[in-house]
Image (cartoon, rainbow, N blue to C red; front, side):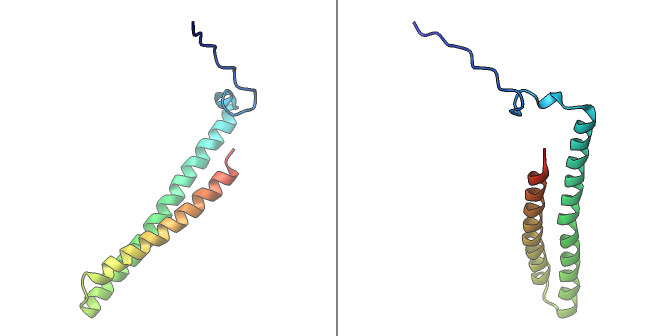
Length: 97
C-alpha cells in the first residue's frame, strides 16, 4: 500500500513561506519600486519610438523615400528599446529583495 507523506514545511527565511510576512512599509516600498520600474520601461520604449519614428517620417518627406526611413526608425527604436529594457530589468532584479 502506497502512502503519501506530506512535504516538509519550508524553512524560515527561505522566501517561500514568509512572502506575506514583511512589514507593511517594505511591501509598500516593493510596490513603489515595481511601479517605478514600469514607469521607466514606458519611457525607455516610448522616447526612441517617438524620436526615430517622427525623424524617419520627416526624412521620408524631405527625401521622398516613404515609408522606408519610418520603418528603419521603428526597427532601430525597437532594438534600442529592447536592449535598454533588458538592461534595466537586470539591474532591478539584482537590487530586488
